[in-house]
Image (tube, rainbow, N blue to C red; front, side, top):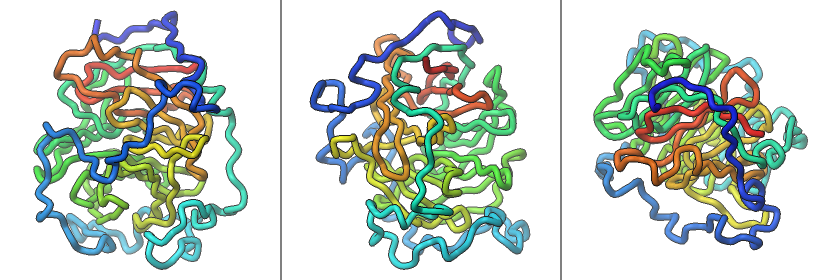
Length: 360
């Protein structure tokens, strides 16, 4: 029953042959997403409270703002020894060419990482649910990430947004921090080089950095994207950058020190059609891809972040079928890997369970 930890390795969920990897998208148009012509005006569900546009912070997203000045170290705690300012392009980020991979801050931009396993093979044959973990059904999950033997969750909605540390086997809340009422929490990333969490918010162009052990807020920062919204964020170790989504068809690369854009790619199907509504993000060490929820869909796409090309289309609609959900439950949202290679956690907004999954 829901809320109980159980193991069901015999239940196999398979994808249709055309779903996992679209080498010929025209072969099954019904299985594909098409670009949303109204993407430029996309918004969150109308039932959610909206932010007052006049209240948006118009200040330049450059300075880090400490909630406690005495706690800001002399050097930015997100700085890494491998970072060299000369690797980041100068000038207006909006002028960066999305097709020009040289703008990405790789140690050797001419060399793209080789995936351990191709995403098409890894995700293309269905999945098995290994177990479930109880999940707070009031949590409007926006970000999910595993580190330090625990699960971290960022939740949304105005006046209800939180960051939590969860016990991995029981789902019990170990620590919880509330955001101020003005913020709508979104994606969450773990930065391993100094054991911190980085969270973005939806409309306020504001992010937060937390100590991953205590969840103490270390400082805030301002950011910008094409839509000036924050949706998803993950740490991408291949280039030592954060990758961020804003609900469009863009993935933004951010410098880990300054949270500034250093490059971007447009996410596309192999036939060149773009895919927007990119939401929660998670780096996958098995394939070196970035996994992204597609907002309002029970699906996840695997993206090569250095080219933007979708490598696999993962149908998770059978994980908790829509017709079995109560009206209070929302869509799939929340992806995390674990300390076991090839093991993944998936949940949704106001879902009562987190599903531990392996692909076959």
